[in-house]
Amino acid sequence: MSKLGNLGARLYRGEVGYDFIGKRKIWYGVSILITITAILGLTVRGLNMGIEFEGGAVFTTPKTSVSASQAEKDAEAAAGGHDAVVQKLGTGGLRIQIAGIDTDKSDQIKEELSKDLGIPSDKINADLVGPSWGETIANKAWQGLAIFMVLVVIYLAIAFEWRMAIAALVALIHDITITVGIYALVGFEVTPGTVIGLLTILGYSLYDTVVVFDSLKEQTKGIEKQTRWTYSDIANRSINSTLVRSINTTVVALLPVAGLLFIGGGFLGAGMLNDISLSLFVGLAAGAYSSIFIATPLVADLKERDPKMKALKKRVLAKRAAAAAKADTEPAGSVVAQAESPLPQEPEDAAPAGAGPRNQPARNRGRGRPSGKRR
Image (cartoon, rainbow, N blue to C red; front, side):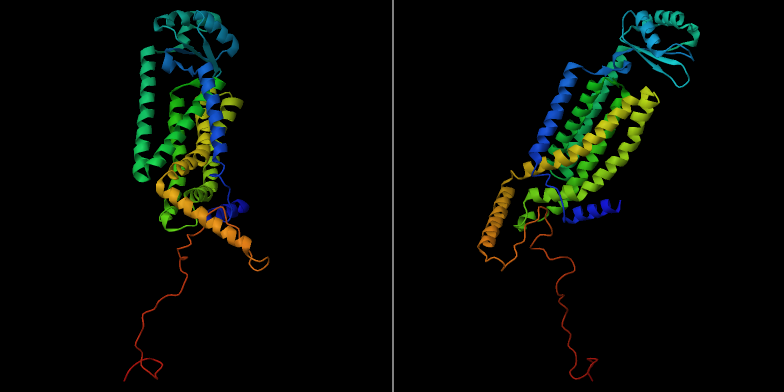
């Protein structure tokens, strides 16, 4: 842990670092490949929508010795071929979910399940969801997502600038697409808990992105007054200076979610936790990735299209070329050439804090007397 802390301090001071911005085309390519895979999965397999969105019925039974697989076959036969999802509850009972059925057929299905499972019909609890209610829920979810996106863009455009707002929006769409695509590929059920998880991970993703943007905003103040660093150089330092913090917060958030997904939903069989835990797990990982590899490099690309930043980059590259040419013409051994660091330190025109002589006001002391007092 001490080594990680030392690494974080060195990254923050710019003593070491990785060139994220310089390799941004690699990250763009990886993201495009993952996004295409997610879209293909969504197109080919589609989403497994829960009854909250499609309508249907949920039957809950008391403790029974009937296996989940056998109950699934019986439920599909009773529902006339409709797909059924059966989960074993911790009490020993069963949760039988049948989507796409008319609510007026629920009594008939309940009687059939009573005969097949050997459970009195009055012991089976039935919860009905109409298709119109599910459609309303889906529409409200999309409206909430759209409102969230608009508010995010407006806030970032005011607090930072429009380029950062665009980059953050692209990163959020990237995270949503990957998360939804994973749901389509693994076939997990989409429930209102999934929607809650999606909105939650968007907040986490935005948090990581804003942390980097805030550092970038502070370090680029007065950037046009120096000729040592380009905007991409300082953007690279902003990523490196916040890298360890982003990794730490993401890992700490992923640990309990991984417990829900792999231990609760997988090992212990609490399948109802899968809908929200998968969206949180995938979204948190995608959000951490996009804030580092997508949002900030995209801001650097957009910013360096500005004429002022283009002129600055031209001056910086010209100065570096002149320094390299001068170093080549120096006699060997006379001057030790110092390589440029990939990460910017303090601007060359700015004096370090607390350094340099202080100008004290002159005092008219008396001559010949140590105390300076006059008679």
